[in-house]
Image 1 (tube, rainbow, N blue to C red):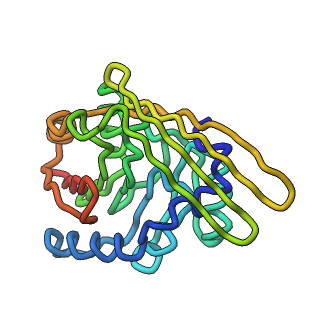
Image 2 (image 1 turned 30 degrees about the horizontal axis):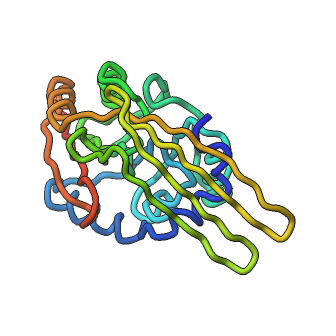
Length: 234
């Protein structure tokens, strides 16, 4: 299971993310395109629930993720919300939502174009008639840099973390080996999180969304991000 070992350190490693500003930017974009009320929201691949912590001030929210360790953190952060331990490709909930979100490139975990198509169509099944699907894509093949290395660090009094990453391309997949070195007063441990995410060209996203019955707008929500696809049911 991906992110299982690093789940407890996830928020420290991604402390650079400004979830509040991302939601503000998202709200501004939605208001540009939608002139009616949107009340309910499902955040797919919600992780530790930090987007939901902000979004719940604007909508009646629920979350879904395939990783139980991440969901446990999300539940503690948002105890009043409902969460589902499900796969985005084939989840089945007996309800519809005005907004469905999938942030931070998590859609790449579906790996294949066939699974991307299944995930999009499954999300559409859970949208209300005037609902919108918001997907923040993973890198395209042109964007992803094979051989690139990166380093994230955490330096706090009782914990030190260094995460080194090497990236490669295998077929249509981006392959990331995340080596974590974590030191606490009790011990120092090392573990590897191996991630494989599908590299889909922008055309794949647009074709699948349009064939799925959506009209699509590509907008930016982060200055250094890949933007989001705002998809409206026709």
